[in-house]
Length: 347
Image (cartoon, rainbow, N blue to C red; front, side, top):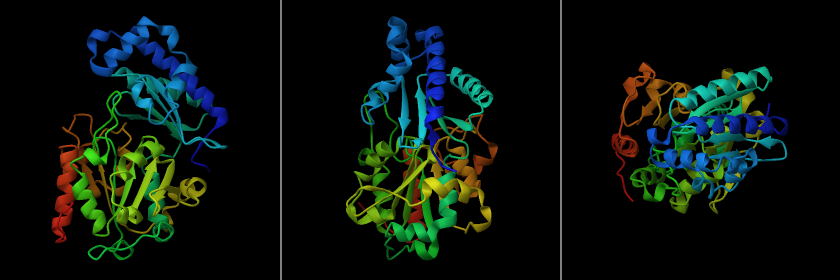
């Protein structure tokens, strides 16, 4: 079972997504929205012919330029086998959940074995069923030693993950760095989390970023701000968990061997999972959001929820791990993690 969506399914997903986006934008009242949502609705209603299926795909084609287009469809991780993930962006408010439900029903009728997740404020993510943020966690629980070997993990003096099985995993947007704004792509370099995260990595801790976002974009936002000596302790899962890479000595992304081919099979085989001291930090406690699968994978006792507020729709089971504060909550958690082990936070 591959973690990629086949080419046969891609055009159907694109068309269903584009239709849903156009339906929302046509009927939406821009006065009821603000920011990029208001801008996008006005732009569509002024020139609806500019938002064909093809134009939306073109808007999402460039990894770094896509942030300039609030209405887009991204095909991420494209290979000869298909795409790791499709993300449609352009529906804001309650209509997004309704659109996701309607698209999911159409996919089931067409016998497309896909799962849909909400991400950010206006995106819907499409992945092969079983591919979500829990997948790299379950893969690591089975192949931990092999992954450490292949990434050339080097222990630190305070933390040796070969022995302690220590892993901190986290979401990206609003957890490790600020979420993108129209035309702006913040990274770890500007984040208050940077110093504490670097201290954890320098101590020998293993860190795995698990992002629903584009793999290459997420990799750059994180790794560009890290010192070279910690590259051997960093994994990046992107495209909703469909891809997993490690950072080599040159700061390049290298795919973890066999992940595409074996992750789904190993993820379902819980009999070979080994216990890890793994924590997941995320900012979305909604059961429809893309962090929820990761929270479930590590268990709520090993979860850290840094949402700005605990919303009524969140799973009540997450109340015990609620920290709040978004980036500041992540920073505080990491600092306390280090302090509990007698490790100083340092630049």
